[in-house]
Picture 1 (cartoon, rainbow, N blue to C red):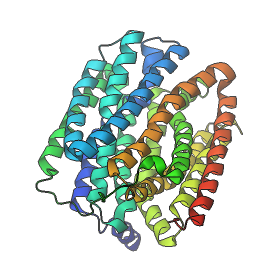
Picture 2 (tube, rainbow, N blue to C red; picture 1 turned 30 degrees about the vertical axis):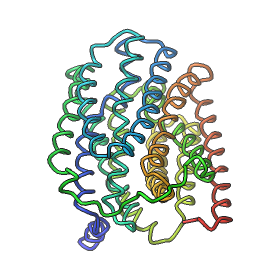
Picture 3 (cartoon, one colour; picture 1 turned 90 degrees about the vertical axis):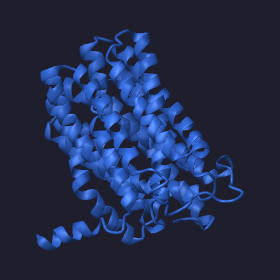
Amino acid sequence: MKTLFKNYIDTFKGLSTEVWWLALITFVNRAGTMVIPFLTLYLKEDLKFSLTEVSLIMAAFGLGSVAGSWIGGKLTDKIGYYKVMVRSLLSTGFLFIVLQYLNTFYSLCIGIFLVMTVADTFRPAMFVAMSVYSKPENKTRSVTLIRLAINLGFSAGPAVGGLIITFLGYSGLFWVDGITCILATILLMMVLNPRVAKPIDNLEIENPVSIYKDKPFWIFFIAMIIFGIIFMQYFSTMPLYYKEVHGLTELQIGILLGLNGFFIFLLEMPLIKWLEDSKYSKIGLTLLGLLLTTISFYLLNITSWIGILIIGMLFVTVGEMIGFPFSNAFAMDRAKKGKSGEYLSMYVMAFAIANVFGHSGGLKLVATVGYANTWYIMAGLGLVGILLLLYLKRVLISKNELT
């Protein structure tokens, strides 16, 4: 046991102090974003909106994410990652507090769009900061550490969120979200001032290649949209499925979603270290992650046994653990061809676009064809993404660019 623990700790060695601070800031921020997994439940159960109205509000959520990701990349290349991160976190905190007072359809569409636009300018800036504070050989593990912070926060967030809903109602979630964003801003300003923290790896190059001429990246981009669309179901349609089909309470839903974060915290870093040492390509591992996530949807239709929910969650968790760090590392490698903010904002934007179509599309499918057929459609969509990644792998091999 002592050797096992030592080997686990060794997987974290070599990461810079600044990356550890970024991870802590991300944890503080993510622990408070407990509104997000319960947003569809809040809109449907508390505010009594129809599924169609909920799907449109979630589309505004996704559109705000797209706008924020694009703006964040542009601002990062123009004014720097530090200013973007500070302004985004602080503004998001106050906007989350205000959001609880909106209760009409149009005001929520506008309010959620604005919140997500401001909130998601943070993501490209954070990835650029993480990249410049990481040694080239540690970038995938740095991504994994940030994801561990996200998922540790997420594992606590839904469970605590379920308790807050039970005892204080949904309004308490918005206050916690806002306050934790403000606390994360204060921590960021204290520990990550760029005049003190020195970059390790500078992504900027002379005469950068335009991302719009990087055809392999656009194949990857489309595949990541598909990956995002099916993965997003676990944060919109899936909580409703747990409640309406299997009769789970909000607290039980929070615990089940929290298992995802717990297993990622426990297993992801050793798994990533082992996969890095195994020398599999980043695209090949991204493909494996998408395959496992796709299988998780098919499993849900095999049986009505409630234990299949846990098995499905394990499949999507392992798929996420493998797929997202290596896809992110692939995007950072491609960023060396051009402007870092532009490349990393487009990576983030792929998932933002998935937010637009994933949440609203999944809810509309459930309303139209039911949960079982929706899961089959998501599995089919995942197969399309797998074929795209297989094609991308062939293209990269032909160009001698497979890493």
